[in-house]
Length: 123
Image 1 (tube, rainbow, N blue to C red):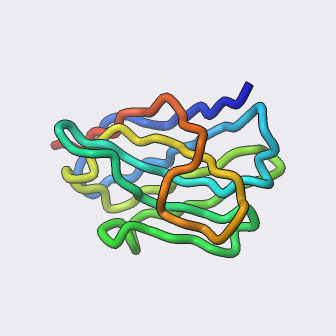
Image 2: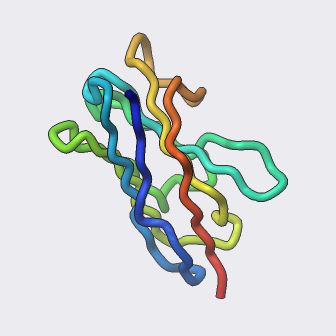
């Protein structure tokens, strides 16, 4: 059974940093593009960052460029999201997502979702 489990969330002050991890199981991780999405209260889920199966292609939402870094370790079946310079508007539930690497990396979600993890940026 395919499973994605996020960890590393919590409460942080503006300007602070957090690193999210997403551990994958039940599918061939190295054959999947991976991504992070987020959903703030009252808003639709939105794309944050994506990384290709090989790590050669990476895409970011414009508002997180220069602050967030997505990476993956295919040996550990894990994808990461390093978040620096956090702002109150980054407050949301963050979701890990996996999509089969059948084509080029896109910002649309793949088939598998994690359960989500809360990030709250507040003083």
